[in-house]
Image 1 (spheres, one colour):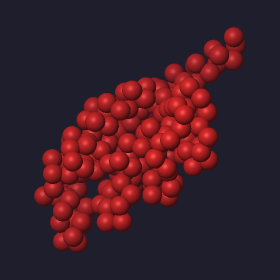
Image 2 (spheres, helix red, strand yellow):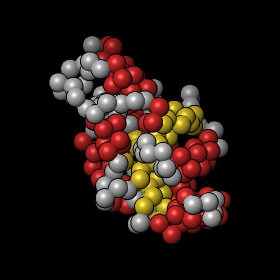
Image 3 (cartoon, rainbow, N blue to C red):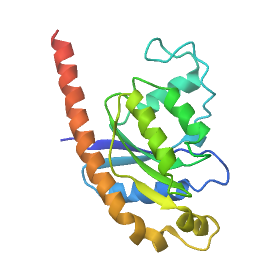
Length: 200
């Protein structure tokens, strides 16, 4: 069986962001699993415009080559882990825009979350789960929540992620267990659909 391709998406594009730190941590942890092939995907490198297509690519092909490049990248993967900062009780504008720039490429795939903020990014993750359901995804139950008392000292260089790993490793294991199971299940189902469609 081929490995499951997982994208770890850094959902903030700010110069002073924290998200690259937990992204590398969870990517390294996920890569320890022999069934996963993990890649970091940084929104900051894609220069995505604000969504300005005539419609979602659920209904018609996108025209902007930057949107198409993003769709092609997202389409490479079987599942996703999104690093979700919480801004004003929701996801970042960059992350919402990234969700909106694709549709078919997200469909019928699993997604997990690592959040950070004053309440561990919980409100951002709940919004992101609702968005992912509309995109016909499977958001897993468990998530990693890095609260303000943990991420602020790391942001300002007073601690490292290794110092808080004991607080977040159990939830990371749960999330990765669930993501792996659902990614395998949805990949198998998509492959069955493709076989049926080819036979028609």
